[in-house]
Image (cartoon, rainbow, N blue to C red; front, side, top):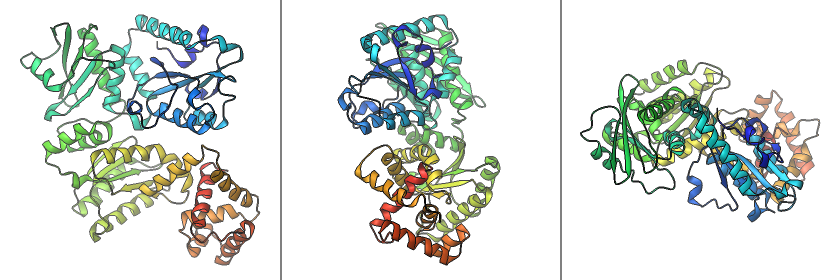
Length: 518
């Protein structure tokens, strides 16, 4: 058993709460509780992933700023929070803004409000009740492996990293962890707050002459543990742990190693250190230091893998497409690394459009994907200068892929500029400002016309790069019909949308219209 958000609602202090959004996330597991009363996007603590955390707040510091509230919720979600209890609604926040409700529903993030007769409930009441339930549950529940599997299922795709998996284990047992493999590749997390050393060299020296298997040593009150295990055709790895007050027996270390295996079995990522394909999950799913060490040991220069390609096969087989993509690269004698990650085909290579062969390779790859399946998509970024940049671009793409499909209805070849525009559209959609009012004014002026002006203008600006003949072909219309509709748009809006910067404003308005399926 594990305590869920729904279980917390039955506790005395939270029985006054009302779930007003994100009800689909009530089965998420709660393992800790925290308080947020300020929000600073530049705060380094926001980069710390704390899985399965329930957050309490009154949003006092930005009680009159709905945009800031939505930004705070988005950041909480990205750092592992699974629900928010909003205190003193009606007293601190006059009312919950609709945009905050929409943000919670979008992420299936339970938003629980305490108002009216619940003003007497204090933060300490909830903290005491919830932590008591969590501790009581952990005392009775011995199935740590099963509960960890459930928690991992709650982690968004873009946050499924080895460090975050180890962090789930570390938070449960209150210890530092170091996972070490061959080629000096390692992953580590530090339990907070902690002054316990977690240096890889210290671990290696401490257990240098220790036999294989489970070992424990104690030094000045510090306990250090080691467990060797294998996976994937006998690939050997070692898990180290250190703590002051926690006693970790052999069964606990064995359970930890079993949970580490979820990285490969549940999430499907490879850490076969004998294969160059291992570099992909190291870059995309681990800290940059691990990938840098692997590059160094494998004598692979970063310039050879600086271009990121992410391909979706639509409704078709990803394995068959993977095979065909490999054939294309081999025909061009081009170095590449490819693997199936997060239900996508991810490729690292080096493509420069200034080189004719590279551009021809790009064209052949895109045409292959386009003809493979009507819902297949192709994303490429050639601008990465470092490993962290590739990882950030990949994460941004996964987060924005659904919105990309909504905005670019008739185009499935995307690049970094499309991601940036999509991020701007989603950000604008969360706020009410004079600029967004202007965009909605454009939409309202055209939405009820019988000539489908919004559909025609969206195809013209977004899908066809303002090319008249291409728009006519796409919409199965005569060129003169498209011209008539575009002129009608100018008349209804009293604006020449073909001139910058008006063109950009109309483009953004149509992108917002598509994003919301208005």
